[in-house]
Length: 355
Image 1 (tube, rainbow, N blue to C red):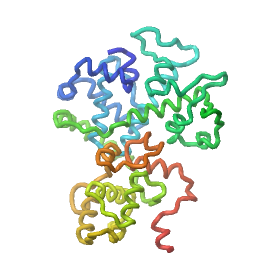
Image 2 (image 1 turned 30 degrees about the horizontal axis):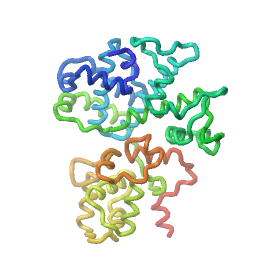
Image 3 (image 1 turned 90 degrees about the horizontal axis):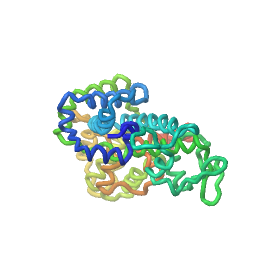
Image 4 (image 1 turned 45 degrees about the vertical axis):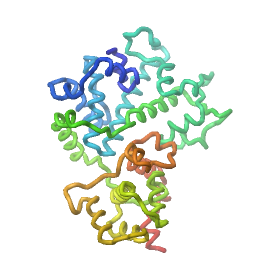
């Protein structure tokens, strides 16, 4: 396992290196392997201060800790944690490749180097053909630019405020690195939460409990009580439209939209009223199912399915650029709410009361 892989564990070659080494994660987590402690530190650090902590001196430990950290994030399965962890990993990567790609830094010179070349990094994210060097910096294909700039805050990232020539957007070197940071974040989030076998999940119970305790203490799980359908992720907009048009929803679709609506502040009464125009509507059953999802009639309150689950059930529709940068519908909605002008946000319930 090369130092390069430990430094950049999200690389496809790093994943291949773990596979080639025939690393048995079940055996690793059952033993007193330092990679488990390092994985926990990656996740806890992401929660507490937005960093993944200092790298372990052993390249194998550092590299193997990355897939274990993704397992821990998956077992906790909180959108706020997933987003914060991916952001922290991407920030660490940004700091590293900024150092490696400094104007006076040597390019990748040997297989033992822990540095990365810009060409390699662009190729990793299939951006090599979309980025051209110019006398003033770089020019990025507009589609690629939009894909990676969609979740970036600030008016300077909006396409309307950028020069556009021949289908390319000029960017400075530092701006290209920010786009690459977003690409890393998307890579880290991809596939989370994972489906974790019991043989791996069970030995990690203490680590999961510690991470959950840190989350509870810092209260990072955002309480959303704002209902703005125009800012919903496309999948939830589509499901809400089907409800309002009186269309029948499959069970998985009904669970997805109901759990989403409870998570953003709608009451059981408000959700029951929404469903009342559906064919075969039964108030008692709808109320029971909604209360159950909310956690009022059982020990568990359910969060909406992840994007991966939505895709597997065919509920992921009308994807936009931001969808490529997130892994959960609630994360999408949080980004949209954060980016929206507060004066322009009008809660759907307030509109209904004024009608």
